[in-house]
Image (cartoon, rainbow, N blue to C red; front, side):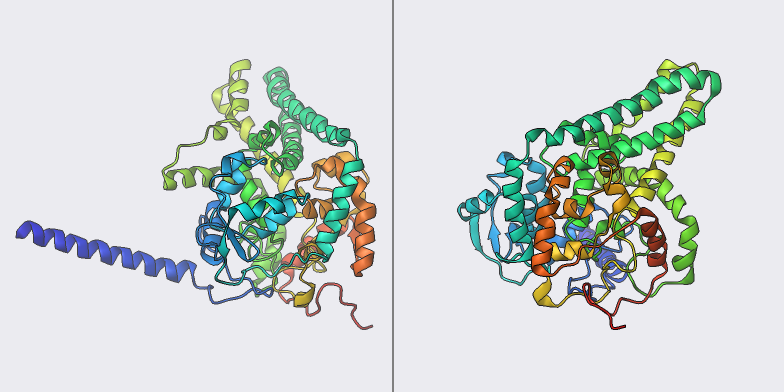
Length: 469
């Protein structure tokens, strides 16, 4: 009896602890669940969690998307379980998104109409609840019309158009290896040159940005170039390709929420510290982007009981070469390695944050959106992006500084090498629908990014509205 009594008490205590944990989590992380974004999107369940990452972002979507453990496209549910390993783009895209609404990903990742014709054989039933996303893909709407034009245009372009992207990206990786391995080995032993390390860091950042072109596409070896940064392309396929690209500047954009509370870009009530002091400390935030993503990846693997992925060791091959091919101490080599990583992280952060999305004239969740009948996903992408004329003028800058950004957001799986040829169809479609495509300069976006950090009142007018003079 005593044993049974103890087991009963133990069970009661465990249940109480579990209940307290749930109440704590409810208080700490679900305090904003009753809020809606200005677009009508539910506030993601785990958005304010301290370990907010791609895994938790997907869990939020599984809660809110009404996919019932399947894959949702528009208002239908599909079971792609038998198709995951046969998916031409690689199994990750479907494996990661099971249980979520993949409408935006399906529409923007498939330029051809062929995938749509295959859907009926995987159809299970209609969804029971409306979509959480406000975006539309009407057959004769802006995006689908543009997509049909782009598909026809791509047929006329030579396949070699993408070769430039491959050659430049390969060259950048080789340059990084040269500056990190050979450059350090020869020069550091004599000059202990942190300047060479700084150059290596910048080249690594350029390589990572160029490699981002490839992790949007079907599985390929160049997407692993990104992993030399200490960040993982698999995590960025979630945070960047599935989150930022599809729900740009909304509460579902991981690239905005991951920087909070240090940098707050959505127009909401902010303290003076976050509005103005962030202008000064933002470079410190950029310096630890790589390391923060690395630590999150390790913590996530430990929490989920997964094996630490081998790709997390890739950056340290550089450190190993430094130790092996120089006469310097392990301590000095480690300092130089992290100097390269931090320099690269700062450069990557400056380029990424100032690339296209943060300016008071660009739509951010909280601003007044377009009317519901104008919530075409393609139009929304134009509202949330600004291209830089000075970057788009050079293909090298396009590939290494997130150029041709509007077209890249509209068609993320198309190699950057093709984008410059697609502007006539894009301009024509914008004119047909009365959509203004606005460009700016890199300097203006830098200034605008600081103004957006300081901004705490939403734009009262929707994008495209001509304000009275």
